[in-house]
Each structure stands twice: as C-alpha cells, then as structure tokens.
Length: 161
Image (tube, rainbow, N blue to C red; front, side, top):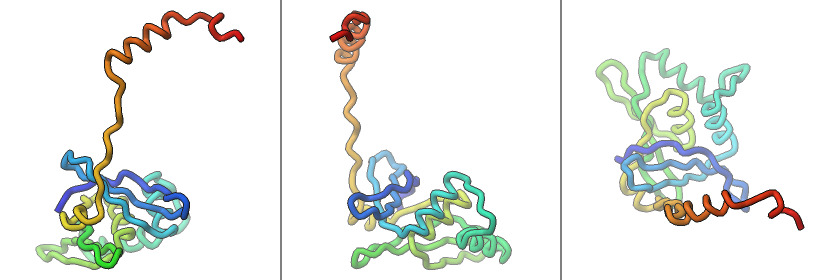
C-alpha cells in the first residue's frame, strides 16, 4: 500500500466531471485521479473547506454512527481497479477487532477528510491508473538574474507608446 494525500477535487473538462486527485507521499510524484459524482465532490469540498451544514450530511452521519458503535476509522484504502471501476475499504477498529467495510472510493475519501485518517492506495491500482506529475520547470538562476537586471533598468517612460 502507498500512503497518499488528497490534493483536491478538480473538474475534468470538457465533461465537467469531478475528479478527486490523490498524490503519493513517497516522493515519487505519482498521482491517482478518480472520477467521482457531484454529490461526493460537494461532500469532500465542504469538509475540506469546513462549510457548516444545518443537518449532518450522509458522510457525517456515517462517521457519527461508527463512533457511536464504539469503533474508530483507522484508514481508508483504494484496493482495486476492475473494468474502470475503483474499489475501496474502510478499515475500522472496535476494541481489539479489526473490521473492513467495502466502500466507493469517493465515499471513503469524504469520510477520511472528516476524520483525518490515512488514505492508502494499492500498488497495483497506482501502477494501473496513476501517472507521474511532471515537475514544474523553474527558470535558471542565470535567467532570474537577467530578468532582475532588466526590471531594475525600467523607467516609467519605457511604458509610453
């Protein structure tokens, strides 16, 4: 399993489809995009932004129910990819008992954001559907120095037509 962080929720163009983007924490710059529904995207964004709701959303209700039943959410895991469908599990602990509950990845991520638990992705899933983030090209020190020198020589008259 690979530990990942939630980069955020984006909208894929042109279909306006929400995508949750996870990034490996191992320094590899690998990312995993997962298409999700509008409702789950909204639930994740609300939790990330701390948006209060007048009544508990479904994910809040589930977190509360799990806690009321004496369990804690240890982690969520994106476990499989079959026929372009991702699968996930909630990993719970109740006393000494480890419990696993099958989940859609979008719901699992919405829950993880609420409780702050680790998010993990199976190596096979990252290998099959992940991509390597291209590093941003940074200008060289020489280019930055040349630009700085150029800026320092500008005068207001340089902007007149």
